[in-house]
Amino acid sequence: MLSTKFTKLSKEEVDRKWWEIGDFFRRNSLWMLMYCTGCCAIELPPAMTSAYDMERLGMGPMATPRQADVLLVTGYLSLKTLRRLIYTYEQMSEPKYVVGIGSCTINGGIYHDSHAVINQLNRYVPVDVYVAGCMPNTEAVMNGFVDLMGLIKTKKANGWKDYHARNEWYMANQKAALGEVKVHDEFHE
Amino acid sequence: MTNSMSNVKMVSEIIENSYKVLKKEVISQYQVSFEVNKDDVHSILTLLKTSGWIQLSYLSAIDWPEENEFELVYIVFNWDKAVHIQIRTRLNRENPVMNSILPIFPGCKYYERETHEFFGIKFPGNPGHEKQLILEEWDDIPPLRKDFDPRAYSDRKFVKREYSNDFVNLNGEKSKQIAREERKEKIIKVRKGGRK
Ligand code: SF4
Image (cartoon, rainbow over all chains, first blue to last red; front, side, top):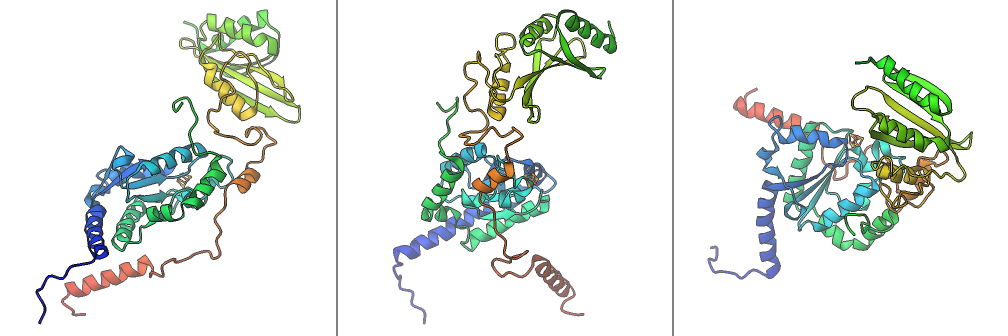
């Protein structure tokens, strides 16, 4: 016979259960911050509006990084934008996920030999899902979001933990590409 | 009202009467280009501004390494007469300096900053022209000079992704295509109640 006696769970168990509950709600209501840097951003209007309607997946746009769960990087990133992207990423509250859209974020795409554009996004910020293509069609983009939800469900979307664990490595890469991550321009001084 | 061809003629008269034009090119009925001496640029632009070309629509440079020269191009624009005028001038490539046109067209501020950044041309008279604008913390020769090699720079600075195979299935999943077909078969089977 099963015991009906209440057994006290360990703290880790309780935490894990709360995280599962949290993840359930998170993955069904993802708020995206769209960092539309490149031409791939043109795939987002059909994904968001009535043609593909990402709200049926529970996804919506969010205007501020502090309230967003997903950072969408759509396309090439110049060094100037990368600097701002790192600012934005670090402002987001955890857990946070990054989706890189387009071959530019994967290996530089057609800008692989440009002086201004970085080649691999996941050297500078951790990327959970990549959507390949130049540009990927809207189905692929939607599929990328579904994949992200699956990864959250199976606890594989751990980019933000990786950012803590290997912080020195990320910092060193950012330094190598940018010199200094801090923004120096008229608006920040 | 004058038509456009006579607009071009009128412009040519204005400029050629008072300045030495090294090369003139009528690109189309709406565009005409004059190559002039470096010292005449400011007075020509002032003249054009007073005759109606009140907007500087572009300022940039072209690199001619064989001739060891930079070519500066100023494009001015008139809201009433449909003619764009390009004023071109050549600078020495070794020590490229051009006095700023800030007093004539204040809008040149950022164009001059950009040109300085991408070609290394100095614009005394424009106070902030040496500040960084687009390329932040640039650590090489100006990138739009022809002797700059973007690929070498990119190879040096950005790590390339290495591919050992053409295609890698990272987590050993079966292909989405196969999974989709299996799902379809299953649905059909259920729909038919397990019958063939
Ligand atoms: S992957 Fe292609 S479509 Fe996307 S940003 Fe790069 S060049 Fe543009």
